[in-house]
Length: 513
Image (cartoon, rainbow, N blue to C red):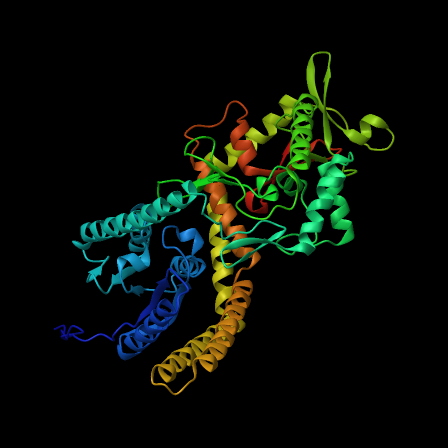
């Protein structure tokens, strides 16, 4: 008779540790905000370490940065990237306003994290995005934060416009040749003499390109400290009314739509022209002559610079000699030929190819990638993910840097405590705090360089390639110029009629044409 044995169910399972990160952000660099910033770091470090079910991954913090756009918050982007690599299970943050003030961006981000099984916990609002009923609340609180930000921005804008109307507004960004001293533009003579020289050379017949080349060769530093001058900068100087002591306000404006992008003013908002707002560098007669000459040369350039380009212009290289292919029309047929072969047939062994043959080769490759049975791009992405994860796990340098950053943050918190208790003089605190922040910035930059491998950038480009190709609902039958410009980076043809097409991410595919 068979024997039966009872196997009792497992009633207790090991507690799974959650990998938790915290996100902090302050919007200004004021002392009060810096204190808040340090307190947030201290609070979340202690909160995570007190919970036995949580493992601290890292405290991510953006200081003195707007919350309207994630693109301007490097630490936020790095945190999301780690989430996508499944290195974080939960994010905690002080409030919705600290996380984002852009409703669309906040909801897209939290939903994307939710699909990855990652929750965001907002302390002040008591919201956890993994809870079923919390998304509507998140939508509401984010909308409120967005409206607050828009209201603050509009109030600030109205204040600035009032000062522009009175001619009292001073831009915090002083042009080359000036320095901002006690909210006034003052002439900075070492740069002012360069401005005078630029006007003199231009009125003596030199072009903006020649002037920029001369300044570069002389080693004259630009406003940003670079050694290379751009002709566009010279043209802007020659047309900038600031150099005659006047100010034209609202050459650019911030759009009212989130996230308030800056746009060139083509008449969308009022401009204000104020005279004698500061000391001039150039007299008005010289400025008017230079500006008139600049406009005349621009008109002449427009008349002489019209030229036709084609989708394949400067896109095909010859595999034999490295020269670009050139477009030719023979007996009514459009062909492309190696420029060196065209000049001397004995110098290069390549030949002429009908444009339709090249287009057909590109179409074949794209259709094979999009509609072929083997999903080649997905296979490439999977291999890149595996390689990248292995690279990051083995990257001891980045791990060591993260530990050093955490230690420096702890020192900053300690400094704040000592100062608040009166144990540190303000000047000593500021000096030591500056030194700590400098070390933290250096370590973060070094860690970013350590982790930003070629694999990561390649994975991003291959992902973009897949998205672009997925927009095709049916195989291509005719050449798509827009798709070609978006996905193809290089092409080459060899003497054996083999077309090599290099796509985003450096993926190379060949086709006989």
